[in-house]
Length: 263
Length: 327
Image (cartoon, rainbow over all chains, first blue to last red; front, side, top):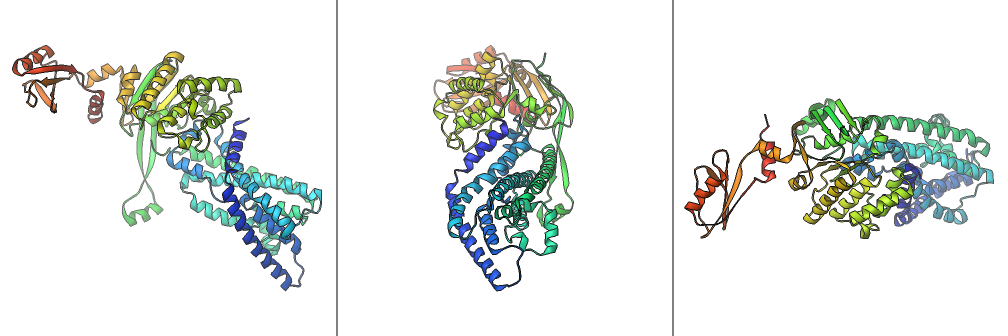
């Protein structure tokens, strides 16, 4: 196994151990999901104007955001934070591996393991009982799967960049909070993006963050037809490449100015 | 031929200074003041293959900085440094796959994983073949008595156990150079002995070149043929331990046990430095009074039951060195 796959797999298996946290999280997400669905149902009933997305698609979108909340780059890597603070970082630098890809591998594990733990049981509840719908065609499902892959690569590159900021801030609480709120909104976690006004769509389309949730979720519901998937995935990958390039540059600067803490 | 060659190494850190008080903190938001700290100020040395060299100096002297430069972690501001012909920070990845490093105050084992899984991960990170890895691991497990600990998560290990695990982790890829940064720090006597014996065996049987930094002078006395002493970024001494001792002080200590207990021992050429119920310790300069003469005088004047002469403990010597810079 290459070093990076080994790190990814070890971290992934480690994070799968947090089942109690996932269960508690599932309860919370279920509760909020029910409230959000009720709010949107009330909106749709109180208005006779045609909406940009059907109620059924919106409910499915909402349940997808609840199930896959952990795709949002929230919370920085506590281990990296500890490493920077107590100087264990020296060991990371004393290994024959590219530190960026090692941290990127950790970020992928950090985004996927919790998502998987929460999404599967949430689907099992929301699909039969809570109004969430299956994709209209196998093509839509396939497009969703590919776009989720793109979303994971993209959000992991954002996460890694945020983790790299720990080299300067040490605590990371501020970066984490700002990033979380901004990305949640811009990815479609708070309000499904099609429901935002037209001028906002222009902005959202030039930003990378809808690739994390909005794109794959609308591919699932068929609101975006599968034929549009290829160019959207290319967009995700292009943004991923940009974040990786930026992350590598920042990390290079960070390690050069590094004064390894203590000892 | 030197395996490690260091010439005029210089490394300066910029440390942000905060002025005291709230006004100072606010001023710091606008304009920061930096203080320059010279961690290495023209350090030069050569180490031959198979040597076991002790690297000593007070806290903040520049020991760890040297180790970090040698292991490719830090880039020096100036100077030459080659390890096995490679410049550590230029060919970092190739370089670090051929060296082993242990930082005694930290662990490179994964906190949540059992020891053996950490070892497996290191096999993948260092791209060691399964067969080579298994052979190296079994040997190290045997030498360091790790057999019972392999399935224990690292967080449950005692410090001594963890250090043995870290030593094994640093050697799984069979490096021929090992940097040990305070490997015995905080360990109990038994664990220290285990670490020392292991390092000695590694050096003698496998010819691994070792640089050892430590504050434990017993480490140095039992292990190292040569010591390098650094303070404030400058190398103050380099050579055998005995020479270091002689250079700082030629004094000897005479400890006298008296037949009838509590009594002072006085002599114009010696100075009392320690006394307890049983014995009195005097220090003297053999250049001014010969050992035989002093013993004769003391034995004639006091009821001596036993006496012995020794060199001052190495801690004493080092403390004196740290206190007063050598010419």
